[in-house]
Length: 78
Image 1 (tube, rainbow, N blue to C red):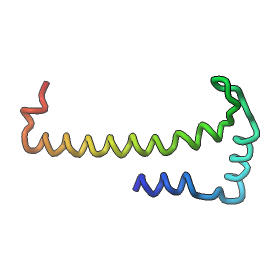
Image 2 (cartoon, rainbow, N blue to C red; image 1 turned 90 degrees about the vertical axis):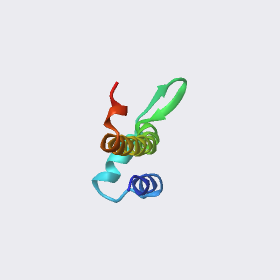
Image 3 (cartoon, rainbow, N blue to C red; image 1 turned 30 degrees about the vertical axis):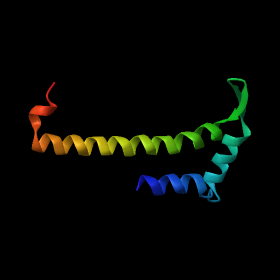
Image 4 (cartoon, one colour; image 1 turned 135 degrees about the vertical axis):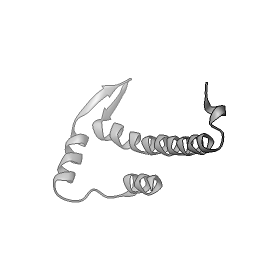
């Protein structure tokens, strides 16, 4: 599921209406960030794929820990 959200966020189009107005406002305001002119939309669009990568890795780690807790709980204790 996170893969489809990432693909849709990167390649999807913004629907007309309030969402398009919000994206236009995010693109209209530029600011200097570490020597480069950026917009809020630049930052927002680059964070979304990383967020899904982190959530996917976290869910895999939690599934592995749940399996270990079920089969060998002693190994998980500090």
